[in-house]
Image (tube, rainbow, N blue to C red):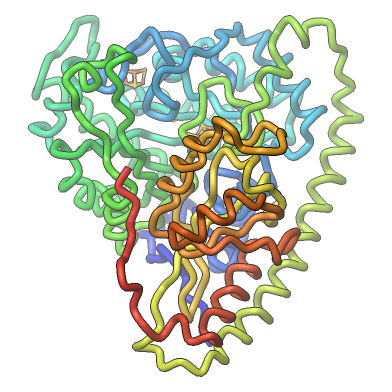
Length: 502
Ligand code: CLF
Ligand code: SF4
């Protein structure tokens, strides 16, 4: 049985050492295709490798308050929405405070491998603060990868400065390559000491983004492109964007859903512009994945996020808590190296086991044309294993199994309905919302589940399963798929194909 490599495509190989091969933003099988120097860059970056995000953490420091453009999905009272959850305000730090915070977090969360600057404005519109932070960290904490995100307007002028600071991961938000569409997203940009409005501003921004992308690729820097999917504005256009950025050598494409709420005070929020449904987002990601490696595990972090993707431990590391802490970073680096080695050993064992699982999957005696893919929802608190109580999950990872492969599709957020009481009480309406959020899934895998949610899930056509607690997610999904095949559940179509619409 041959494993399908998802989202795989040959990326135009930059001579200077950029992405020379396929696949990332997904599992380790894809990383195996990469040249060693690229693999070294992505294997423990939780955003660039889907597998890494189960094991490694990232953190952001909010040192960059200003911005040089206006996006219709952003209100500058809040963090940059290009790579952050809209409506969130971060703790603004000076570069010195940021460095202190990063070293404290690195000593306490040794799985933290990446420091990103992603706001609260545009990091490259604040070059002194951004580069001062990077310069100090390169000296004091050389084992931390440095990462930055930008709207791209100031990028071409700062590419050489980025290279000096040893930054080898850059995210650029590119929502369009057509200025007429850009004019519907960006009302103005700030360019050469004045505001440039509408189509003209969008045209300048697009040129700068494309130029900056080429310059980064030429220098061997890995580029992730973020695009905000705005139904009716750029949703039909983003496949073309994907092709264009792939042609230039971008490494990974992350299509994010627009989040527009009236209470955020953004133009789109106030005008009632809707975001995409789960289905629309997935369909676009699938369409783009023919041309580009797709990231599907983005959590739209805060500009001061700390911890694994999907969790936020920022409250443990506010400045008032860490100002007096003394960090012995030499000792921290020893501990960090040990923890990273243990993670790598776990992953190596998992890959070995996964190969065996897939060999047994291939023995399903069901004619291929009659098998159908099955979506399963997973409750996990990290580590790539099923280790969370159904009622404690604030999000579920969605995997798709078919006769060839198991692939990560997305995550879906839910509210916490279980507060540890014996009964669900008022939580029942929240439970109903959770069940609605899991529409389209046929199985939910968790470490434990209560009697009441079990019954409600079953009634909704979603089979709860606690038999694979503490197993690796992909192994468990493959095993359940195999069991379904053996029971004859895969050789007929679902009578009603439920797909989440909210
Ligand atoms: Fe931060 Fe972005 Fe670097 Fe990651 S986040 S600067 S590449 S370290 Fe990651 Fe967060 Fe999505 Fe960004 S999940 S919002 S993609
Ligand atoms: Fe807001 Fe970021 Fe757009 Fe600037 S680039 S307007 S901070 S979303």
